Length: 552
View (cartoon, helix red, strand yellow):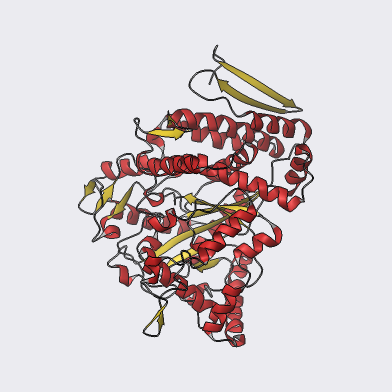
């Protein structure tokens, strides 16, 4: 991106801060003026750390598997505490699908260190089991043999179990075994006050923050294909995942299907998509509309789900026959979030205090990283999300939504194909051109973050992603396919080998500190105690509990 006749640069200078925003006259669009002006104002007028210290947290899913690579049928280990109440170690859909949860930290290394410690502690309790390292699952013998997560005998535990049973009936249990990384992020509190003053907005701070988080979400819908290209790590899968289903995928070997230019099959037709959910229109115009539409989907019957029934032969199949059983059933690459009070529904929490942070759900497990994600990815994601906040974010009309769906679906299947084209306001554009334009803006954000942290870590993280745009063969998805071809092996066997190597990696680490072990052990024992208290204080019938929950 040199200074040729078709380029110009805008230099924003304050003290040691130099922010360069490059524009190309040909091929790439000029960075939107709103972004340019906002970043310039923040760099010129704000404190050096105006974009530093936003809170980052990670939720990482991993299947427990046998040494031979089959899904574990063993109960959730009691040594890991109660899956219902443990803050750090829980389960997702299946009893075998662990979920590791870190606290929110201002520095990425803190979150990653905690995530590594959870892995190390968990492996010490698992005996001979492995943690599956890929987003697409291990060998699945049959849909019916995937055990639902169990949480005890309380009403809240039963509700979680019935909800998961409903997911199995609606979408198939196989799909629920797909694993991913959820990246939770909130901008620094000091940013919001400075940004609101800069925007000269007199709205309540909660309303202002929520409006701009929704702007971030709309832009993530527009630009989220870039995350699939850069971090997609599921270009192949085990044939057992789609056993009995016709799929239009090339065969890699007798065990595996793949897409030659695929990035994230997890985020495509074979993963988190369904025709019913595609027909649910959840507005991102404003928070009231978002809550209204999500609530409507929870209260609107769906004929296909009415056929399943709620309670059949005395057993619950699902919580309701509506388009969504609860808010969390709505699959989206990004969600607006607020920490809920005990028993509070997610929409009620949003109504109470507005959007507190965003949850990014489109990151695949990186099979090459023992914890599934690395600092470069997290630092880039932080700068990218700030870019989405500061960029102009028009409301999404039907045409924009269709383009976003095309770009996500196309990138998941063909993101590295030189002939693949994204849609941008009715025009076809090469992925590389649009990606380089976005990365120019993200790099400018990264420079401001680095100024506040007296480093160049965020710029390096962004430059690393630029290399992936210019060299598709260096992306995780391409590297995985290269490993499969060069090793003349299938997806399952490669992933199993990586799982074995990752177990050895954690075993070779220095032992956890007594303080860290004590913290995990205390949470294990306290979680078991908390579950027992919940069960001892249940006084309602399950039917009364469910009725009261939905009435609220």
